[in-house]
Length: 234
DNA sequence: GCGACAG
DNA sequence: ATCTTGTCGC
Image (tube, rainbow, N blue to C red; front, side, top):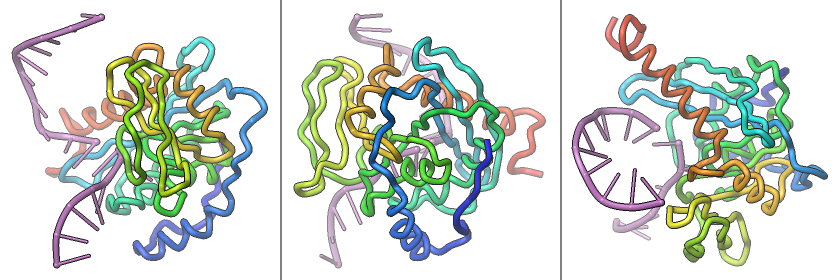
């Protein structure tokens, strides 16, 4: 697919925060009229002591849960991990991955927060706006917000709140297992986001999209970290 | 100053 | 995120 980057990525942490404050106005909260069918999962894997990083996207059919297409790349990290600025580290390589994808997905699920962010512009919002696709964030842990633990059954959820504002949902995708943190990205509603994540978690805690993308980036990382792969020691 | 802090 | 074996449970 064709992707245009609306700003520079070579910025300072302060510059990054300013970009977030400006781009947040481009986020739409209007969800599609019906459930998206082709869902892309996006993930990034790192190497501990090297600037190498691996990104991938896997497109899954929401109905059959079959993989439609997958794409992955290796890249150099150009921004450090800073809480609240994760998108400046992960979106650049993900843009390259989506340019490589020939299937146009209807939705993107990110491994991180969307609206549940200090400036309401987490990774899922940033990627969704740039790709101009509906998106949502499904994180394994919390960045900001307070919440009560949801009930113990799959499907139970509680609101994730920042003061009086509901910024996301803490959703149990598997009975008796730690919940995930859902928040809207671009063109998405919290209700639809939960519905989509539940449909993509028939047997595991994380969405099949995320799991498959995660599996792919780890294969890419090992492939270049192991054998004759070009890595840290020339 | 102290604690928190997606991946 | 990454470093890592076995182990308890469905």
